[in-house]
Length: 322
Image (cartoon, rainbow, N blue to C red; front, side):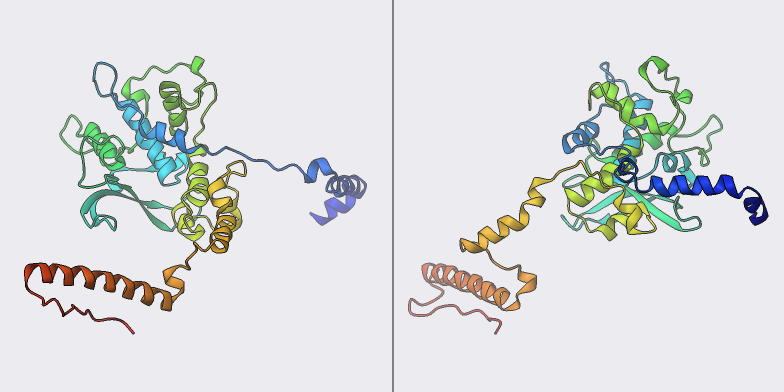
């Protein structure tokens, strides 16, 4: 290669000089490609409420498929290609204990290989999001939606489970008749699932939703709205480094509640309302606990006197931490 460059030294000298000067050009240095945008919180809610049945109450398999695909893109940060690679043979039914309610809830575990890290086995879960027990009629529950999708896949004519069938099968297999006039160049691709929901539900009227917006919404809202730690989100997106992860945070998204948090804490302290976090102040935690015990002692003593169990001159004493 070097002899070839030396033979054409004059041409390459001019090229290198051009690119060296280009780096100093403000138009080049100030250009930052933003890529896809993140969806807002209310738009995510509209997608979660998307219908899976038509006006006659008939289940539309393509609508159901699009909604489950939207859950995968937004809730788990999948690429559209991850949806296309998902197979029924890689799905397992699991149960877990909800750390909010303590109830046992179902989930569907999808095993696969990381797109960004070939050879690394990863797991993702379509999880029951019901507040209490699992509700089969809850259209917000992604587990119930994917369960309905599996039932629609069902069995083939021979009665055998189509294990190698894709979890998100082709729109053409369902007899859907989307036309190019609606701007769906890839009618059979998962990347157009968000746009199909947009056309039906009016999520963002007059604009187009792309498949990569789901992954960017997962990272942006997870980091700036729900305030999840970056490493926890990277464990889901399987980014190799923080530099690539940061590119998925939409710079146009603004969370004023988070941006004003530090200022509001300062003002709370100055006005005498601020209390340090319990985890960071052991002495304060002990004092708060003893205060609650004193309040509980007074209640138990009053109840005991009223019921005649405790004398009027005696009080109940609970063990305190010193």
